[in-house]
Length: 201
Image (cartoon, rainbow, N blue to C red; front, side, top):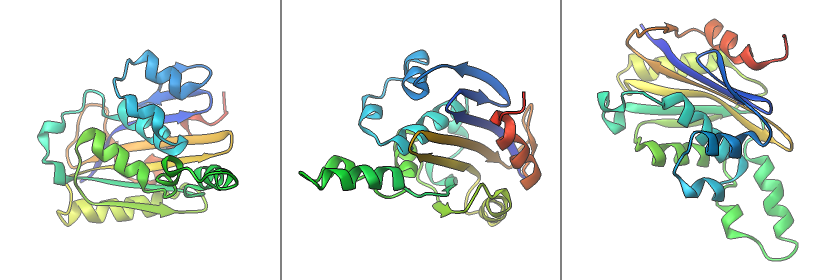
Protein backbone atom coordinates (compact mmCIF):
# COMPACT_ATOMS: atom_id res chain seq x y z
CA UNK A 1 0.00 0.00 0.00
CA UNK A 2 1.19 3.52 -0.76
CA UNK A 3 1.19 6.36 1.74
CA UNK A 4 1.50 10.14 1.73
CA UNK A 5 4.40 10.45 4.17
CA UNK A 6 4.86 14.20 3.79
CA UNK A 7 3.31 17.26 2.19
CA UNK A 8 4.18 20.90 1.56
CA UNK A 9 2.04 23.76 0.32
CA UNK A 10 3.13 27.28 -0.60
CA UNK A 11 0.89 30.08 -1.81
CA UNK A 12 1.07 33.88 -1.87
CA UNK A 13 0.38 34.10 1.86
CA UNK A 14 2.08 31.22 3.67
CA UNK A 15 3.89 27.90 3.64
CA UNK A 16 2.53 24.72 5.22
CA UNK A 17 4.29 21.45 6.00
CA UNK A 18 2.29 18.36 6.88
CA UNK A 19 -0.77 20.51 7.46
CA UNK A 20 0.86 23.01 9.81
CA UNK A 21 1.55 26.62 8.88
CA UNK A 22 5.30 27.09 9.26
CA UNK A 23 5.86 30.49 7.67
CA UNK A 24 4.00 33.55 6.43
CA UNK A 25 5.14 36.87 5.07
CA UNK A 26 5.68 39.08 2.06
CA UNK A 27 7.82 38.03 -0.92
CA UNK A 28 7.44 34.55 0.40
CA UNK A 29 9.99 32.71 -1.75
CA UNK A 30 12.94 34.97 -0.98
CA UNK A 31 11.75 35.17 2.64
CA UNK A 32 11.69 31.36 2.88
CA UNK A 33 15.18 31.18 1.38
CA UNK A 34 16.54 33.55 4.00
CA UNK A 35 14.54 32.17 6.92
CA UNK A 36 15.65 28.57 6.34
CA UNK A 37 19.16 29.63 5.30
CA UNK A 38 19.22 27.59 2.10
CA UNK A 39 22.66 27.68 0.54
CA UNK A 40 21.95 27.48 -3.18
CA UNK A 41 22.92 30.64 -5.12
CA UNK A 42 21.39 29.28 -8.34
CA UNK A 43 17.99 29.79 -6.69
CA UNK A 44 18.03 33.45 -7.70
CA UNK A 45 18.78 32.63 -11.34
CA UNK A 46 15.76 30.37 -11.75
CA UNK A 47 12.42 31.43 -13.15
CA UNK A 48 9.44 31.84 -10.82
CA UNK A 49 8.02 28.37 -11.48
CA UNK A 50 11.32 26.64 -10.73
CA UNK A 51 11.94 28.69 -7.59
CA UNK A 52 8.47 27.79 -6.35
CA UNK A 53 8.97 24.07 -7.00
CA UNK A 54 12.46 24.18 -5.53
CA UNK A 55 11.23 25.85 -2.32
CA UNK A 56 8.36 23.38 -1.90
CA UNK A 57 10.71 20.43 -2.41
CA UNK A 58 13.17 21.85 0.14
CA UNK A 59 10.44 22.02 2.77
CA UNK A 60 8.92 18.68 1.79
CA UNK A 61 12.20 16.76 1.99
CA UNK A 62 13.65 18.36 5.10
CA UNK A 63 14.61 15.51 7.40
CA UNK A 64 13.75 12.85 4.82
CA UNK A 65 16.01 9.81 4.77
CA UNK A 66 17.04 10.01 1.11
CA UNK A 67 19.69 7.36 1.79
CA UNK A 68 16.95 4.76 2.01
CA UNK A 69 16.65 4.89 -1.79
CA UNK A 70 18.93 4.78 -4.79
CA UNK A 71 18.72 7.97 -6.93
CA UNK A 72 16.95 6.08 -9.75
CA UNK A 73 14.29 4.78 -7.34
CA UNK A 74 12.71 8.19 -6.68
CA UNK A 75 10.32 9.57 -9.32
CA UNK A 76 9.08 13.13 -9.75
CA UNK A 77 5.62 13.67 -11.28
CA UNK A 78 4.23 17.21 -11.37
CA UNK A 79 1.34 19.07 -12.96
CA UNK A 80 -0.13 22.51 -13.51
CA UNK A 81 -2.62 24.35 -15.73
CA UNK A 82 -0.50 26.93 -17.52
CA UNK A 83 2.77 25.17 -18.32
CA UNK A 84 5.63 27.71 -18.33
CA UNK A 85 3.41 30.52 -19.64
CA UNK A 86 4.62 33.04 -17.06
CA UNK A 87 8.21 32.58 -18.26
CA UNK A 88 7.17 32.30 -21.91
CA UNK A 89 5.64 35.76 -21.62
CA UNK A 90 8.76 37.19 -20.00
CA UNK A 91 10.92 35.64 -22.73
CA UNK A 92 8.69 37.11 -25.45
CA UNK A 93 9.18 40.54 -23.89
CA UNK A 94 12.97 40.16 -24.18
CA UNK A 95 12.71 39.40 -27.92
CA UNK A 96 11.63 42.99 -28.52
CA UNK A 97 15.22 43.94 -27.79
CA UNK A 98 17.77 41.14 -27.34
CA UNK A 99 16.40 37.63 -26.64
CA UNK A 100 17.57 36.37 -23.25
CA UNK A 101 19.10 32.85 -23.30
CA UNK A 102 18.94 32.76 -19.49
CA UNK A 103 15.15 33.17 -19.64
CA UNK A 104 14.69 30.93 -22.68
CA UNK A 105 16.11 27.87 -20.88
CA UNK A 106 13.10 27.97 -18.53
CA UNK A 107 10.43 27.97 -21.25
CA UNK A 108 9.44 24.36 -20.58
CA UNK A 109 7.43 23.35 -17.51
CA UNK A 110 9.52 20.23 -16.83
CA UNK A 111 12.58 22.38 -16.07
CA UNK A 112 11.28 22.65 -12.51
CA UNK A 113 11.60 18.86 -12.27
CA UNK A 114 15.17 19.13 -13.47
CA UNK A 115 16.00 21.71 -10.82
CA UNK A 116 14.54 19.53 -8.06
CA UNK A 117 16.38 16.46 -9.35
CA UNK A 118 19.72 18.29 -9.57
CA UNK A 119 19.35 19.65 -6.04
CA UNK A 120 18.41 16.28 -4.52
CA UNK A 121 20.39 14.04 -6.89
CA UNK A 122 17.33 12.18 -8.14
CA UNK A 123 17.46 10.13 -11.33
CA UNK A 124 14.13 8.32 -11.41
CA UNK A 125 11.15 8.46 -13.75
CA UNK A 126 9.66 11.92 -14.29
CA UNK A 127 6.65 13.43 -16.00
CA UNK A 128 4.83 16.76 -16.15
CA UNK A 129 1.09 16.85 -16.87
CA UNK A 130 -1.00 19.84 -17.97
CA UNK A 131 -4.48 19.79 -16.43
CA UNK A 132 -7.29 22.34 -16.21
CA UNK A 133 -7.02 22.12 -12.43
CA UNK A 134 -5.45 20.01 -9.70
CA UNK A 135 -6.30 16.42 -10.63
CA UNK A 136 -5.49 14.07 -7.74
CA UNK A 137 -7.18 11.13 -9.49
CA UNK A 138 -4.75 11.37 -12.41
CA UNK A 139 -1.73 11.64 -10.10
CA UNK A 140 -2.78 8.73 -7.88
CA UNK A 141 -3.30 6.50 -10.92
CA UNK A 142 0.00 7.41 -12.56
CA UNK A 143 2.15 7.41 -9.43
CA UNK A 144 0.41 4.30 -8.11
CA UNK A 145 1.37 2.48 -11.31
CA UNK A 146 5.01 3.55 -10.98
CA UNK A 147 5.20 2.21 -7.45
CA UNK A 148 3.19 -0.96 -7.98
CA UNK A 149 5.16 -1.86 -11.11
CA UNK A 150 8.47 -1.35 -9.29
CA UNK A 151 9.50 1.49 -11.61
CA UNK A 152 9.96 3.64 -8.50
CA UNK A 153 10.01 3.05 -4.76
CA UNK A 154 9.12 6.64 -3.83
CA UNK A 155 7.74 9.66 -5.64
CA UNK A 156 7.48 13.42 -5.26
CA UNK A 157 4.24 14.47 -6.89
CA UNK A 158 1.79 17.34 -6.96
CA UNK A 159 1.00 20.76 -8.38
CA UNK A 160 3.34 23.69 -9.14
CA UNK A 161 1.66 26.69 -10.78
CA UNK A 162 2.75 30.28 -11.35
CA UNK A 163 1.07 32.85 -13.55
CA UNK A 164 1.37 36.59 -13.05
CA UNK A 165 0.94 37.37 -9.36
CA UNK A 166 -0.84 34.11 -8.58
CA UNK A 167 0.97 30.95 -7.56
CA UNK A 168 0.61 27.76 -5.58
CA UNK A 169 2.68 24.65 -4.99
CA UNK A 170 1.39 21.49 -3.36
CA UNK A 171 3.92 18.67 -3.20
CA UNK A 172 3.46 15.21 -1.70
CA UNK A 173 6.01 12.55 -0.81
CA UNK A 174 4.68 9.10 -1.63
CA UNK A 175 6.28 5.95 -0.24
CA UNK A 176 5.38 2.30 0.15
CA UNK A 177 5.96 2.36 3.89
CA UNK A 178 3.87 3.76 6.70
CA UNK A 179 5.56 6.38 8.86
CA UNK A 180 4.34 8.49 11.76
CA UNK A 181 1.61 10.81 10.53
CA UNK A 182 1.31 9.11 7.14
CA UNK A 183 -2.09 8.84 5.47
CA UNK A 184 -3.20 6.51 2.66
CA UNK A 185 -2.27 7.70 -0.83
CA UNK A 186 -5.71 8.40 -2.25
CA UNK A 187 -7.19 11.12 -4.43
CA UNK A 188 -9.41 12.16 -1.53
CA UNK A 189 -6.51 12.63 0.87
CA UNK A 190 -4.51 14.56 -1.72
CA UNK A 191 -7.47 16.85 -2.38
CA UNK A 192 -8.02 17.43 1.35
CA UNK A 193 -4.38 18.41 1.87
CA UNK A 194 -4.35 20.55 -1.29
CA UNK A 195 -7.19 22.64 0.12
CA UNK A 196 -5.33 23.32 3.40
CA UNK A 197 -4.23 26.79 2.34
CA UNK A 198 -7.48 27.85 0.70
CA UNK A 199 -9.35 30.71 2.41
CA UNK A 200 -11.73 29.03 4.84
CA UNK A 201 -10.62 30.44 8.19
